[in-house]
Length: 259
Image 1 (cartoon, one colour):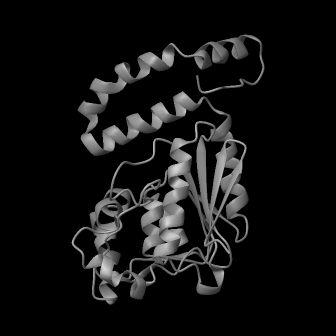
Image 2 (cartoon, rainbow, N blue to C red; image 1 turned 135 degrees about the horizontal axis):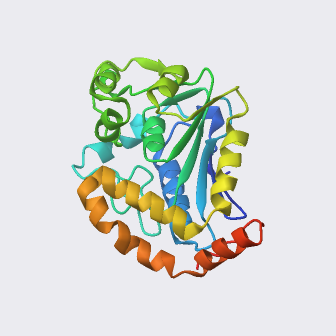
């Protein structure tokens, strides 16, 4: 049985953790299956958005540490293989396409860190989050120390990174860490509704919006300003722009081709 369910549904790639008997604890094999799914999302021109979710009652209990100890000690970190793309975006290039994230139950350590490398997050009420690494003798190495302070503020981030304490879905929603707080069991359907809306939007416009936002965060607002119109120019010459205008004039839904 695959540790990760990967299914193409229209222009959406569903990526589902599938080790519910182990609370979706991530071993190395699961990591490589997720990394392969991310590579598929990036390189399949027909795919426009990913949706990450988990089977069972919990998103993940975190990394299976006994399977990862040797990797952490190598001084290089987690390395994706050929035909893979790091879902934490610590190693190698990142995605140019958005990912919607749906969490439930417990979402610990690597679950939080994968969530931080997604773009829109949905959590079921009652979901519990934590970075437990300081209780296990290490520190978070999948991006939490890099991204969590930016997402929820320095003090909030250190409150949980330095103690290993849990925080709630309600806190995550108040901080803006998750964008939708839903009833348990509804997280996948809400995430799917959002993913479908993205999949019907202009692909070049979506990717341009995402890229410009990422430049602003990683390189600063001035860099993003300088690159804004040069990045927009080829998009304005696309067939999708003509379709967007024509569909508006004809009062119908646009059908974008990503060209």
